[in-house]
Image (cartoon, rainbow, N blue to C red; front, side):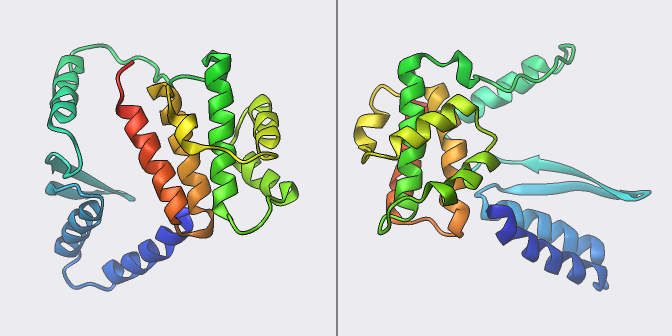
Length: 203
């Protein structure tokens, strides 16, 4: 998983900070650099310690890969919501709310990601099941994935008429599957790219 890759780097950076003679400046540079890895240009406006916590205020510019229209919508939405009372967060579309046709697409897309994770070998369900369970998927979805694993899946057909909200669900789970072996092979990369494109389509 991505956390298994990043955490050792974080531990190393924390140790460097603890032994630095200029901790504040080093931490400011570290925050900006790590966000830069994600294509985000950020400026630390304020950094203070408070008991056992560190408080940081950031100024973030539009990420390099972000569409200008999307970024402006985010800015406008934040401004419009500033004076609204807070409401419980909505986790978004759930599997039960997806149409049966889209449910099948989701099942087959995740099955495809599992198939191409180790394309040279036949899928071993006993190995796959713990992976699936860690993704906290609905039992019905797991059953559908197991059934879909029995036959080859066509990525191009699966992303056709895939609804953006369903693509978003699939992308999150697909990333987790792709990073299981800490690398992304060409088939996985193409699938993730197509899911990202499907998310951006208007319904």
